Length: 343
Image (tube, rainbow, N blue to C red; front, side, top):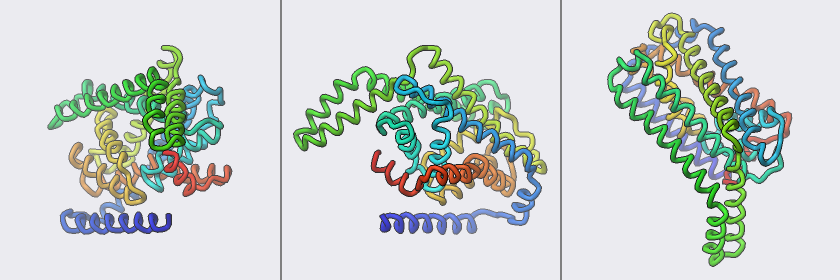
């Protein structure tokens, strides 16, 4: 593992070096203006954005309790600590740590890890679906977006997001309906290589299939979707408040909710391939480029806003995640390694 860690840090250092060289060579940037923008940012709006993000973790915990209810009844905040620790792991170790949450929740609730990975799949389906609905609504009803160049390209992104959501839903339905037969087929095929392997894969597939049994009625589906829409609306508000904190830059201070959806979609897309630590800088660069292109914000203000957005949506969670990890005697490094093994 030490060798892998050294390799990872070497890659991170190389990426940062290349980014710094490209930035210095091709971008005209006034660091004095950048620090002035940060210094004059409204702290009350930044804290309001952080508060919105913290509430979304409570919503995630409530939704996860709803998803596992057919298997095990738990309190609505039973998984809150696991969410904070899991997203702290992602902030520090990148997207490779994404399965830390289902792993920790499985341990916390004493359920099979594969069943909680199934719940994680459903969670992502609702996340993507809710974000796509909000994004598509902004495209349809926001005059600011409709007036932007390449409006049709944004529409294609919305349609693609909805299509991916539908694809995940179809996958979940197929596994739920035919999971037992698929498990038997997998066991038969892989048992020719190793009986233990075939049995293990089949058992994991059956546990995954049982984990997909998350919603038992239309009412529960509507509750889950309402929670998801509310959560992503709060995320969008956090983006708006972070932009409005830059009171000396009209392009950001006057940003409207619908227009912020473009920035949120860009940020979400960039976070899907987030690297450890280096991902912070790529995320800032990506959101800054989006703000410059979409809203005409000066690059210094856009970069400062990108740094604030990173703090609000990701880094601000780290202290709470570390507190929960310390209280629960959880090692982030070991948790990430264990979740990778589980995957």
